[in-house]
Image (cartoon, rainbow, N blue to C red; front, side, top):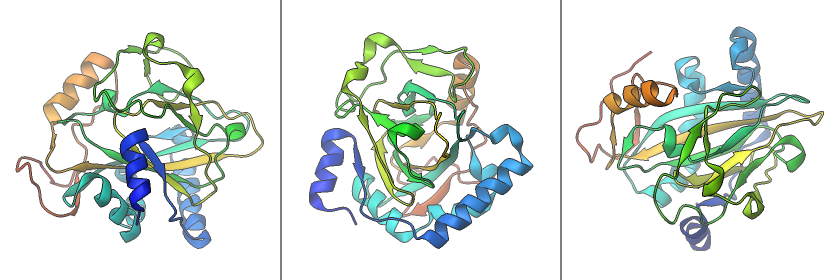
Length: 253
């Protein structure tokens, strides 16, 4: 569980580093799963944006009781897992992730999500760790983004440079097995990995069921922004009930 001061830090800064960490045996299983996935699907060498569509074994980590307890502290007792991604920054040429807000890509209204970022390897400035701008969630608005047509990046939307000051960035340094949790409006990104070590991380995206996962909006976002179409995403109700009453939990492949 997060302490009261950690919950307060999340509310104030938009992120927190948890005390709970995965065991080495769990980490080894996840690394092996990641290796098998990339061998089977080489296109996911740098990013697999929808892990559960390709390997449901990753669903097990998303149901870890300690992780769900922490998420409940931050977004309430009724929530669903709507996505899991794998960011695999290989040694020496791992791609950068441009500065962005997660909500720029997501069809959730009202916009609300807690992301759990799990380090499979040590995540340091040298390997391209997550960087955040503390407190940037407070305005609770999506800032201006622009389309990015570039190679060597994992995403196609980036924050307009007028919307942030990179000198305010803070590195989120994690040892393998540690995890951070961050808010949907937090400004964040990461640099390329030119080190001799990989930097792999799994994200678990949880939404409160007071919000609605709008599949029609997902298709419009894909058409207008050129982002991944989330319309066929499977939602997994992991705790509580659907407070919105409109969310569709049918299994999709």
